[in-house]
Length: 335
Image (cartoon, rainbow, N blue to C red; front, side):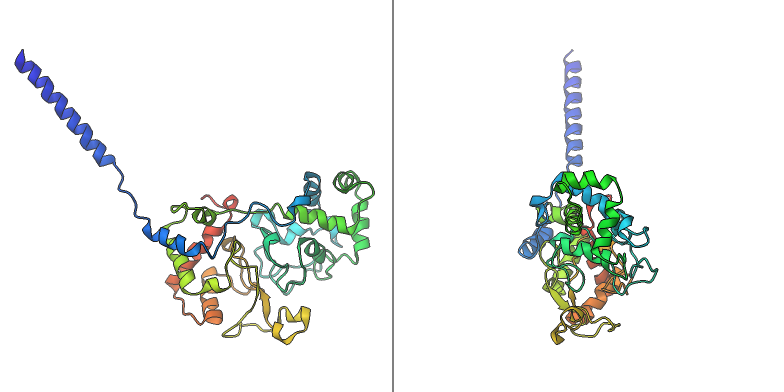
């Protein structure tokens, strides 16, 4: 009997030992995130999470946003009746058409790349050359531009909208009776565009989630700092808060577009452009004001050479590009 009890005790002890060993084997080794933490601490003063709301949202009622969305897709705001804002700034493809430059209703490509409409209300000015102060002013520009949607004047745009019966009720709900005018057309479109805010994995990293981006991507961020890209690309948009000369150290390959000089006529504004925002940059190529470079990695190498007198290797460019793609909006990615 005693022998049998001893055998049972030994069996239990062995079982407990096996369970304990198995439990220890399953314990995960804690990942060392000290490098990521160090980089996060370094970048926090330079960057910011994308805010949830754009400036000016306070007056954006649901009725104005609904109307603005319909107008954004409205082809009657082009002279041929087959082009809308979404044609060149496609919401489904990160707010661009991914062409070097977009064609107008005349079928002729324009001189400049169509920038994304996503997060545009956070930019300090609109258009590459800053000729519009805000989204309201920007919204009317392409409609009346003869090289784009080519409506001859604002009165024609208003008449085209009035000719569509359903707009009467939509404008009344958004702005009141007899409110179909060009100012309200652009105000409603701006209200809709102010809803086009994106958040991404880099936001999560800035909030303290050290695993939101991979170590390779953090190494790209480290290089982004070390190569001095942050000189111009900072804040919540990592850009879009200043003008800078394209070709600061070495000239850009095409000097036909003189940038902001064409707006101001001031010599110091020659080849000055709004610094591009880097949010969604992995989705919105091709790059530069003329869409002249297809590859993000090539763009990074060129920018280092032209703007910063920095030699960036292909391996370094790949890592920086990997970091930049952490800012692709979550709605466009699986991450």
